[in-house]
View 1: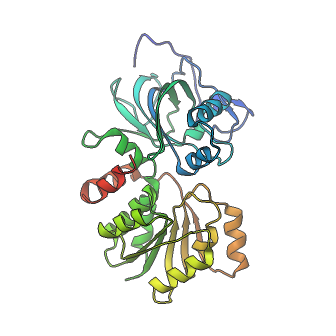
View 2: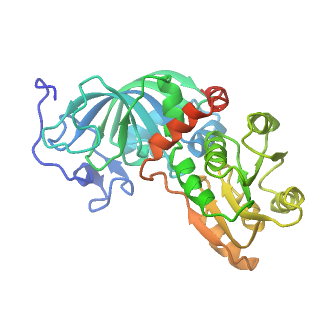
Length: 349
């Protein structure tokens, strides 16, 4: 802890004391958070270097035609956090430990001041203050800033490993919940089962890698709007085949999956795209009693539930959770153990 920085007594373990409006809500559900200093004695204070905006949010911000920096500044100034009011999503951040309160008992406990870290919790519940913008990296959905953020002890975070560039680590950790859960899914599928991944971005690429590492016997198929990431994933051995098509065309996706699986459809489909309106593509591509995982923040879970009911799909529907025990280590180990992964992810940084 930095002795020169003062502290406020108390502080709720979930960060509820930072909620300004409406009172009584958890930080993620709140409209406005307090990002003021000094911190409470249960909190961690971070100097923020980079915001990794989630794909759905960044895509929406780009679609307005307004400067990304101005839109983010307006959101953070109004809400005290990066919580896109259109998509409801945020992202995560890269920073350095500035101060740990004496009663902070979270994952950063014991780290020296200045240690580079990445948060593993959404910006939608992280009190954030931006002093200035440095640079926007559109391809990576990352924004360099000068500012500070505050974490309660319940918020997952991890020190940045020294064997990878920080920007690559942030890009990987931003989606590390997906490969961790796909690893679990892959391990319970029957021998030689078909798994389809819709979306070949960071989450999709890492999920294919996780499925391949966990179960080499599975047949893995990838779909995306763009040929380049699909071809790269295929060359890297992450999928057995691919199709470039619009995932909002559910019938076209179903036909493609039928063709790839010999008419069987998939035992499991994971939806990783940031496009809205792709839910039925995943549902129609899944065989009866199969499994659908929805990770994209553009997903409408009303459309998922009612859509599956409307077509008589007796399938298991899962909401992708960004947190799983050991998810950060699993994702980073995938990058270390599969050399072909690193250039694919680095292209997005």
